[in-house]
Image 1 (cartoon, one colour):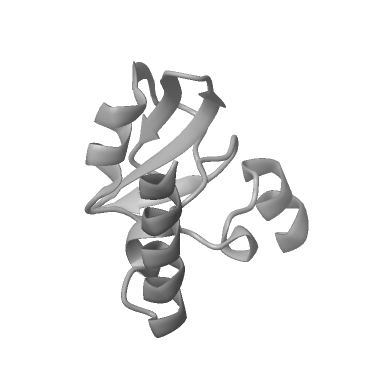
Image 2 (cartoon, one colour):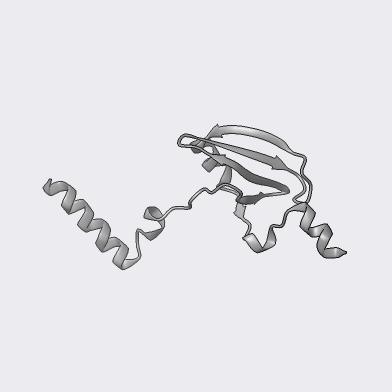
Amino acid sequence: MRIVFKRIDRIAKALACGRARDRVVGMKLRQGQIWQRGDEYIQIVQVERLAVQYKARKRLNRKEGTHHTVTKKEFCRLLKTAELLPPADVQPPGRQAAERA
């Protein structure tokens, strides 16, 4: 029990100093997030306890793409070189056409 409290105390001190903030706080995977990896866009379709279903496509404004199911670990490795697009930049294909008209 004492070891657990010592470890929690060390983590709290490291967070107060700002040293371990990046290791402790992580990114949450949410349905509908779109990530850009090079010239490919990756959209999360469904997040489960141990698996992630995603759709990979070349153009953001097109619906066609390939569906994949991988473990969360594999998906996180895939996202290491990707960048999360902010929700304001992401619009469904139908809205883009309606806004132009």
